[in-house]
Image (cartoon, rainbow, N blue to C red; front, side):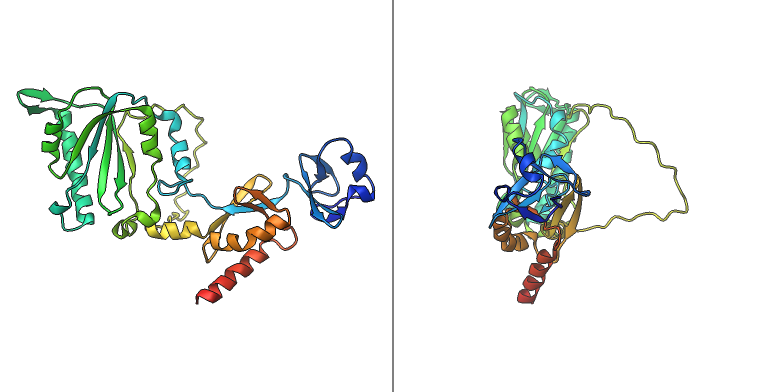
Length: 327
């Protein structure tokens, strides 16, 4: 008997061709994607009733929730940090500043955000060129980073780390800032990493911010991050003046959140592609995960094996049902 990918075959205990002799070797095997070739590293999923489904990791097609690289996603933030993790400096004992705003000085949170960013740049300029305070000149001309965060109330605050151990009087900093409260502390590497991992959930962001097209959550000056290892440069593509320029789609932060929520990732043979549904992916997933688990197609961590014959038909049916009930 030649087992075929995706088709149920008889249980070993019922006999049938080469399967028993292979199974008794103590290995888990399954049919490959091409013909009836046998490949190792697969699993035999017992569906009950004397049937076993052969599942080969080499050719199974799966679907999973799309995880964006975003500072506002509880999992996606690790994709962002993964890009800079090996370049983060040692900040132990370095100067750690926090700047908050006094709501009484502004009409709303948005105007406070716009004004405070300019004031912060001016403050850095003053420190870089030296500021006199009580007869002494204080100069901070070291590389630094800025992390932008928002309170639940919608008001912004800033965390700043300078790569220096120099002393800076809190009273001087408060005088330069003049928009609210300040803190002058020393930071540890553990606190720095926790600061970077802090996530503001999309639903907690102020509405005015979601209407913006971008927000630089984490910024660094030259010299703060370590120099990245040199990589081989890809060969340059010759410029074709006749080729039309590709324009990237431009979305607001809120629109990106909405698009990401409706996206899934389909994987096959080590390749991946995204698919965008017309309703949130999690809504469809919640309707199908139980049946997938009962069929032995749930792999864990939100990943489901797509049936070979029906493909994503069931996903589209649930999508259409949800669209009908919401309209």
